Image (cartoon, rainbow, N blue to C red; front, side, top):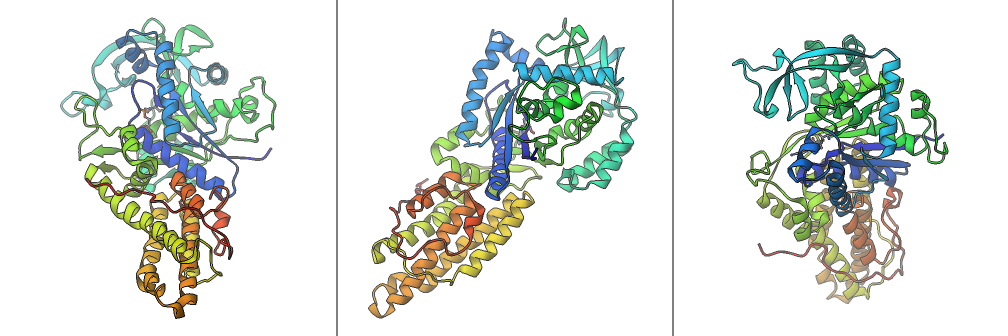
Amino acid sequence: MNKRFYITTAIDYVNGQPHLGHAYEKVIADVIARSRRSLGQDVFFLTGLDEHGQKVQQAALAEGKKPQVYCDELADVWEKFAKKLALTNDDFIRTTQPRHKEIVQASLAKVNAGGHVYKTTYEGFYSTKEETFLTEKDRRPDGTFDPSYGEVIRLKEDNYFFKLKGEQQWLIDYLEANPSFVQPDNRRNEVLGFLRNNELEDLCISRPVARLNWGIPLPFDENYVTYVWFDALVNYITVPAAQGDDTVPKALGAANSRSPAANGQLWPADVHVIGKDILKFHAVYWPIMLKALGLPLPKQIVVHGWWQKDGQKMSKTTGNVVDPIAVIDEWGLDAFRFYVLRELDIGPDGNWTDAGFRARYSAELANGLGNLVNRSLSMLKRYRNGVVPARSDELAADAAKAVAETRANLEQHQLQSALQTIWSLITRANQYVDQTAPFKLAKDPAQAKRLDEVLYNLAETCRVLAVLLWPFLPGTAEKIYAQLGVKGAPEKFASANWGGLAEGHSIGEPAPLFPRKDV
Ligand code: MSP
C-alpha cells in the first residue's frame, strides 16, 4: 500500500464556541496539508472534536441538555467553522462516533491483554476541572495547588491504571536519537527535561460510572468509562482504521471491516499539530500507548504557542477574546489566515492586537500584494488591451529565488519564513514598477517594446505569486488566477516556474483583492 502524508490537529473539546487558538492551529495544519499537496504528495488531513469527559458533561448539564444532544448541536457549529476557515480536511472525527468507540475498546482490550493495565485503589487529590489526579509533587511551595487546577478534592477510588513506570528510558533514547520527533527544539528539550528529572507515574485510565458516565465503557469492566485522554488520543488511529488502512486493525487484532488498500496507508502519522499545553499527552503518554499497542510512533509532533489578546490571557469571563468568525466576516478569511501565520511563528506565544491586525492588512495585503496585482493587471488592460506581450525574463531570477526558498520553507513547516520570502518578491515587484515607471513608458511610442517587457514581467510575477500563496491564501490566489484569465486553480507548486503566461493570452478583469478600509 502506498503511504499517504497524514497530518492531524488536536481535537477540540466541544464545550463552547471556537476561538482564535482553535482556529490558529487548524489553519497551520491546513497550510501544511495544502502545501504538501501542492508539492505533489498524497495527503490526508484529519481534524475533529473531543466529545467525552467531564468538561463536556458539565457544559451539557449547565444547559439542561443530554450530553449527546449538546454535542450534536455544537458539532454542527464546529463543522461549519472548519468550512469557514476553508480547511481541506479529508475527515472530521467525533469521539462519540461508533467507529471511534470500536477502536478505543479494541485498544483497551489489547493493552489489558498485554499486561499493561492493573486495578488498584487510589487515594489522593483530584482536580475536577482538569480531570486529573494530583500528587504531593504538584503542590506549590505554600502547599496550595495551581489555580489552573480549579477545585481540588480528596478522593479514594478503585481504578484501572496504565503502566508508565519503566517506559522512561526508551523514550528518552528515542527523543535523543530522533531530534525532529518533537519540534521546535525548545519543546523537545522540555520533554527530555521532564523525562530525565521525574519518575513517570502510572496513568489512571478509568473513571467510575458512578462519578462520570459520559465516556466509552471499558471493555473489561462495565462499571467504568475510559479516561478522556486515553479516548481522545486514539482518534489518530481510529480514522486510519476507518479509512481502510489495515496497519491499525492488524496491530489491535481487530477485524478489518473495510476494504483495505482502497485509500492507501495512513499510520504512522507524519505530523501531529498541537498546542504547547498538551505536549506531555502527545510526546509522553501517546508514544507509550502506541508501543503497548504494537504500533509505530508518529514521525513528528509540531508544537505551536498560545495567543493572548492585548497582552492578556483570552478568557470568556472577562470578554477578552478574539472571535475569528467576526474577524473573517469583517475582513475576509485570507486576511485572518495571513495575520495569524505572518504574525506568529510556530513555537513562541503571540499577542493579537486589533491595531496590529489592521496595520498588516493595510501595509502587506492592501498596499503590498493588492496594489501590485491591481496595478500590474490594470496597466496590461489599459495599455495592451489585456493581451500578454512576448515573454521577458527580467524578474525571472528573483521569482526563481523566491520559489526555491518557499519550497525549502514549506518542506520544513516554516510558514512564517515562507510568507516573508513571498513578500520579498512582492516588494521587489512593487519596486520594479516604481523604477521602470510603465505609466511614463506608455506615453512614449518609442518605448513600446520596453513597456511590453515590463508588463510581461509584472503579470508573470503575479501568476507565480498566486501559486506560492495558494496554501496560505487560497481564495486570493484563485482570484489572481481568475483575474489573469488562467484556467484551473494555482494549486500545483510545479507551475510556479517562470514563463507560464503565453504571449497573446487575454487576461480577465482586474479588481481590488483587499479593499482599503478607512478605520
Ligand atoms: N481535547 C483536547 C485535545 C485532544 S487531542 C487528542 C484539548 N482541547 S482544547 O479545545 O482545549 O484545545 C485544542 C487545541 O487548541 C490545543 O492544541 C490547544 O493548545 C489549542 N489552543 C487552545 N487555546 C489556545 C490559544 N489561546 N492559543 C493557541 N492555541 C490554543 O486540549
